[in-house]
Image (tube, rainbow, N blue to C red; front, side, top):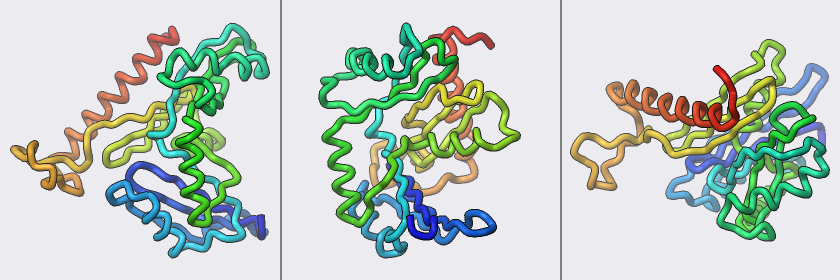
Length: 247
């Protein structure tokens, strides 16, 4: 890592956002930033634009895995030993997903007391991840760390000294949103979902695909956030019920 420079690249379903920071005597500072739209989900074109607008050489690269590649599952294990969990988890997750365990890469975080086995597992198909990394490397992006979208922001918030024990972090996009629920300063739940569209259609335009607006109008803002909050409320409520968490 030359000069302590680090580039974080957040790849979602709608945009790519990149921030470069450098270390110095007074701490880290932002060197550059860029935001590239994923028009028509053309990842390669967006990565080419990013590579042209930002020097990615001699930087440690941290890149997120897009939401739609990852499947999240909360799993209860009968033990808290990390080694045992790592051995048993693939077989627990396999019954929840329509893929063979041999086709998956699985990682996890513990969500509660280490003496018990509350687990948040993230699963990615090996072929999909391999194709994703090949596409990144073709544009000069060879990440040292791959992270699940939403978790870096939540982890940063949790590191702040005045952050409460229980928080909810929401990354809201135009179409897809990522919810991260943290309990007792641990990530306990991650869900990525399609919610109310920020590209709302005008009345009577449901059958006209090309009539989508690119921005929320003033009259759409309140219904959009009410619908989004409704989905978040039901997601968190379902998790609390399934985990037996009291109010």
